Image (tube, rainbow, N blue to C red):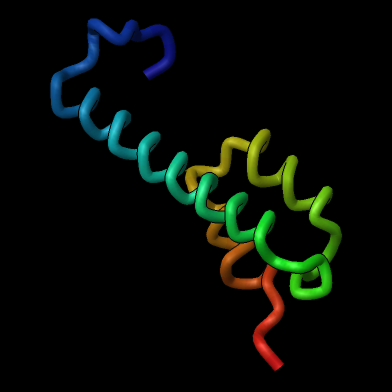
Length: 76
């Protein structure tokens, strides 16, 4: 797919890319909102470690999922 322009892509491919981007953006936003509302003691690792992992890393949704699965401590 290297070297193709947006206009070269099929309508289906464009829709899939847009849907994937929307899902990843939603997951990142949900993780960041949860992290902001959650006390630091309920998060494994530093909040400042998670913020770049969630915002900068292009992870196809894996970084937010990792936060939700392993980054949060379970209720005592």
